[in-house]
Image (cartoon, rainbow, N blue to C red; front, side, top):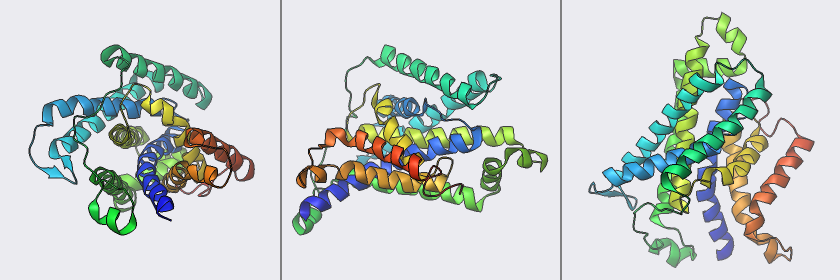
Length: 305
């Protein structure tokens, strides 16, 4: 039982990261109408931005949930950097192209290679880590449930929850959010209704890329940082978006939660006699993605924005 609780706890942390990545990818698809294969490398870009910023702000005193206050400032810098780069990419690359969604998809693959090449040329290919001392498991959870959960894990879950709630309030309680939902539902109707869809698309890039960067920062904090960290997780993020319903922000949240949990629960398969270790977890996510496409192409949430 303790082992299952440990898998669930790990799944909750990993799901928090996948949810942030999935929301951004779904936002881009719902409003810009193409699958952005550079999304994983946008996550990496934000993680490296935070890594550099942490070298500047890391010495600030005080901690929150075991993380220095400087880390959260670095997180904000990483999110801002990813947003700026994504907007510039949209303005300089995607927007001038007179092509369809397939053309944009292929272009985004090239953009991903450029992002990765710049990061590799600047930082090399070695693994890096934020200079934050790792703390041990929280004694109360370890003693009562025999589950090893660190303050860092809790910080990732709480931070992701805050960002998701903030996005929900933006979409449901603000005029800008209503314009974003209207543009995602029907861009032509939104345009003739007086909504300046060009500005909405820019906001979409800012929000989606910033959330992706946050996911990349937490992923690097959870494991290690290298130029392929976002690309390596892109398949899992796509699986989450497709499971939830591609183009649906709330579906992406649900899909991210389910895929993240299934990813971390994969070791249970070996416990019941199936020779599938955690190394095959991305493949399990891929199988789920294909199965959903065959049975329910619109995903769990369908067309719900």
